[in-house]
Image (cartoon, rainbow over all chains, first blue to last red):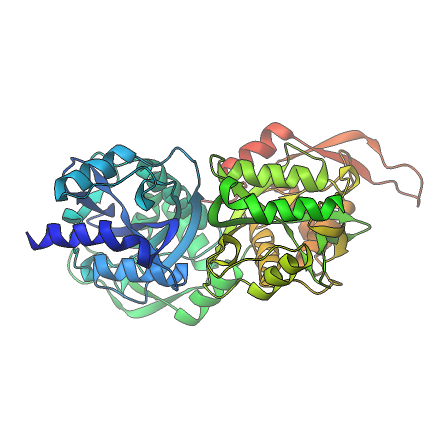
Length: 257
Length: 257
């Protein structure tokens, strides 16, 4: 099989190309049908899923590696991507998983083999527009697809912890940074924006408080159009004011210190 | 010299003990005389200073390594310490600095020597009570002391960038987390707390807005005592309500979503 040859090549030659002991794991969030989704790959030869991971080339900036891995899995470039934590427990690696995978493609590793040594992984999270993503697996995996964060398949190693911390970071970010430009379509109603916040926070918010607070942030343009179809009173459409949105990303939302 | 022997030993044997390609750099902040200070060490054989740095033992959790390095420099354990960024530019290392230092102690390294390879550094920042710290240098440095962030000596490699990003993170943190417990004495007045915020933000704040907002966070206890001495009207003393303070650290300040 061509794919197994690629995997064999990775095992045999990876040490020449990749920075030792460092990996990247990116939690890619999307929003669809009022659900918060995460992009996962099913790894070959095991019944376990992984967030979007990869390695860093020896002369590659870690942020460039994260961008490259994200592009490989989604087809997208130029999207919101942020470091959020480094997972540095010396016992986090699963040697058995690697050894099992190597056996499947006929690679025989000794104890000092690079992939069996300790790896520290850098956690990134990304917010992407669900409808623009083409989930793409590679030779290490059988599948790449979206999963609702409330209904996840079994995850490898500490990837449950990585996903949980990414979600926690996203929730904290709502307190001081705008969010939504990468997750919503270009035009949206206030109830749609509220639904996004409610989905991320996993709780109901008061409609009037939400609107007051959101308008207070001064990052929205109210459009002349209203949402057509549906009930009697069509809600207004909004879009983000990108100049103000990006200023708020840099300087924090109005209402801070 | 005994110290040069220690440094020689580090060059000769470090590769056996330390995780390759990973270092820790901690920006240690203190508050004294209404100045925000940072703890720096002057490195041997060069006129350059460094934030509190070190390496990670092969079986050591990265957070434990950061705690250990902090204890070595300050004498303190159990203090506020937080990862804030990973510096992963492949060109960030200064080979000449290492080679020069090695020459001084008579260690001859080839191109494949561990310390001359690429290092990715994990940035932590710490908030400490200035008066409790005993600045302590090690065999790699001539001095360890506090410096006002507005009056810094020349810094090695990307340590200016590391320090700048730590400060930026601290400022952002003011927007959604309580701060001050580790920086102020146990009892303080509202003007003293305001001065801390003004010093970190490097700008004046309105007295009444500050007090209203801070009391709204509901993390302070007003004590029966007032500050004695000074002008006519002695200001009230406050302390942090630690139970509420720690809840706000976990869940964010009141007033968020």
